[in-house]
Image (tube, rainbow, N blue to C red; front, side):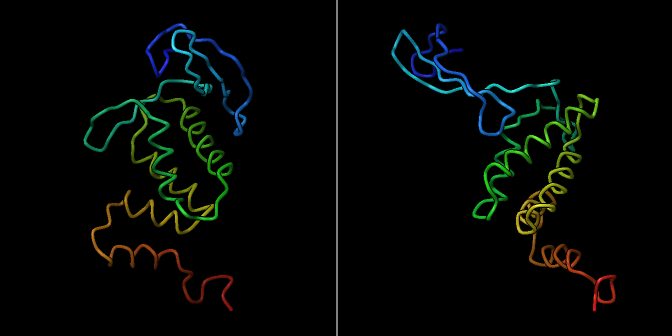
Length: 157
């Protein structure tokens, strides 16, 4: 592992333990060249995934990019960080276990929206507004009206 401070490739692992999410290993490292200390995380990757964008462009799947977009949607919401990490790990496991290496970005967005809808409606609407490219307040209104129970639906009194 290259030292982020001096670039030396001769770093040493001083401590390893499971990370809080229990799906990765947290390693404390030391660089003998500059004395710097830093932390790395190691996780299992079943296969290399490629995201196929709607315009046909392809790019390597980036777990950090997925995590950033979900964290933005869940910002200031009452969701524990552990639950968020479990959700992200579940999404990645689901993508890796599909058996395909090429994953359409549309499918990833749908899976994320499905997961967010289960844990927080506000985060679901936030993510959907970006994912579905809402342009006006009417777009929000239409989307939110689909979430509301319809009069006369089962469960109404």
